[in-house]
Length: 272
Length: 196
Image (cartoon, rainbow over all chains, first blue to last red; front, top):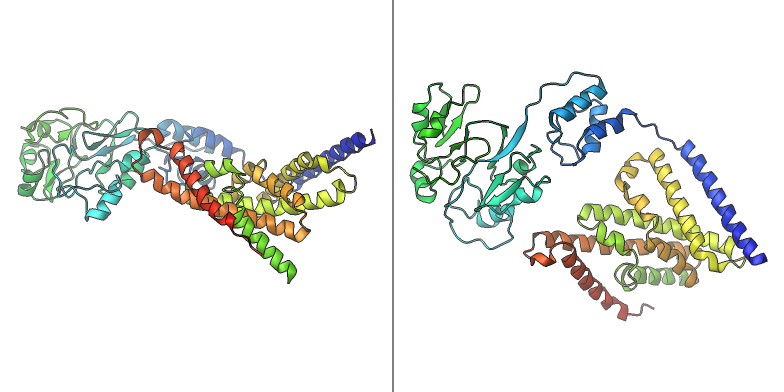
């Protein structure tokens, strides 16, 4: 009986003492947290993608609170998140333009300098083979480094080339950062005219190694009435401040590499 | 000199021959859970080392000055859980106030450790082995060092596994479990030695 009593007493007293100590400690060591912080965190999507340049949503919310970061850096949350955050912080939200990632390469049929059988990762392939195993110096390698960094399941390898699902893409641009060849670029969602090629090699060489690479033929440039498309360094480049999306360059391109932002139109059409 | 020798042998056995994870199989949960990246593994290791050292000291004192005189040895497990949980909570609050940088670094790992069986294990083993206070603390800290060693080694193995071309059905946890088994096998090699 005595034994049970002492056991119960010891445990009970210890529990009470610890409870009291913790209660006092929580008062003594209390840290003030700004009440807007949890609200800001709630406004963010919580994917911790790092697209804003901070370690995660918590870190970004903290930075906004301290005035170190601007509102509207969160690509994944989009207009909705920046509006909510602006409301919490009591400032006007700026217009939000949705950006998505796009792979500037149509890639199929491209030939290889040699066979690469190492770690299936673009960065490793670039490192081991000296600028990559593909004959095209700028095209997508298709080992899927971008796929592994995407937290939203929005980029996949199809027919040997990375392809962004623009509806799933939140624009965090982790793939843009990860791509060792810089083939992936940010584009405005719903852009009608994009160039699906990054190749800067001369036309004659491009013609040999790729069926769908820009050969710098200047046909698009001649066709454009608005002076909005130019061939620079053997590659067509669009000036979006002048482009009106008339689509005449797309119609005339012999390699069918001018497309809309989703790269869905004419993807499988044979080159002219 | 004798104390030094016994401490040395305790350290060696805690780190290698009786490694908490790979030989005693205590604390497997964080070993599998937080070993995907080397830097988080190091963070977890440091936090565990810290808590194991602290818990060894506190539980030894509780056992010798409270449980032993009252002949309540059979209550060790429940009392130690209580002591460790309260201790970790207290330390967490203290760190948040006094050392925010360290608190950030240890982050979510501290509360995770509260109910870790490696921590409870070291407290119980200290009493079972009849260690003195200093020996207990050294055993706790070195057990934590052994934990860190194992988890860091394993995390670098797992980072490699990420890039490996392994069969689809083995991807992720299955291959990690196999790798953990092989690592444990290799640590079994140390247990043949007798130090002093």
